[in-house]
Length: 140
Length: 140
DNA sequence: CAGCATCCTCCGCGATACTG
DNA sequence: CAGTATCGCGGAGGATGCTG
Image (cartoon, protein in one colour):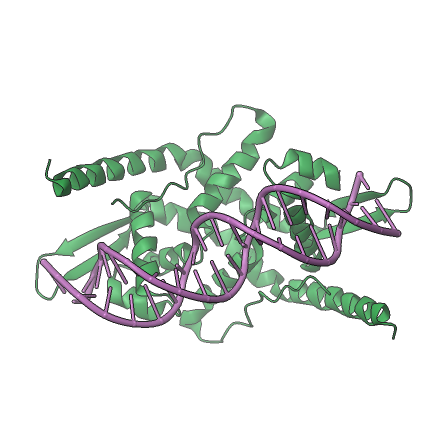
């Protein structure tokens, strides 16, 4: 019955201090799952069929692809078009709303790209320190 | 021992088609959890102590705040400064890297803000359709 | 082909108790 | 104050099997 998706943070309080946190919560409700962004990005290139998406998103199960698409459709980010042919053909495409989201993500992806090595370096440093402390803790 | 965090997607394949997906995976590794963004946003305003963060982030447990901060520290987004006083005083602050991330998130937050009503409307429409179909399925 | 239903597993995370 | 250690549950999500 329905998809059973209740994960909707309520409306944001008018409290100015809390507003930003609330926006972020809404944001996360939408795209903090494993697959939504991947789907949006692929559909941003062009319209795709169910099985195309399934093949192009490495590791996604059929179940999760369905759920993700339903979620995106419900949020108005994606449209689902069923062609009454046999075998069935269903195409998904980004709405203008979805396209806007994709644009808004651009800077974030760019940031990730340009800073990945810096992050990796930071991790290496941190882990080296941890290992050292662990070794000491063990008495060596 | 250590934090035990293994969730690091490996380096991205040089395959041009797969690159974008890979970037997104890295992105999600970093901030697709419940709390990281909230912490980053608060630290973006200014330096804060552990218990300040705990109080200002509604619903976070002590354990999760610790884990989140360790994660952010490891990624080089946050610095942790311990003042050798009693009672202990530990301050967290955003690094330039973290500040860059916060900036990159700006457009996304803006998008959420301006489109929340559109999304809510889409959800209402979708749910209305679903309910109707559910009613029919029950035979009414 | 494009799903929905069911079962089952794993682990994220909250609750609680203890420490420097 | 700012943590660490341990236990336990709930739900996200993978595997599998059936349908129009």
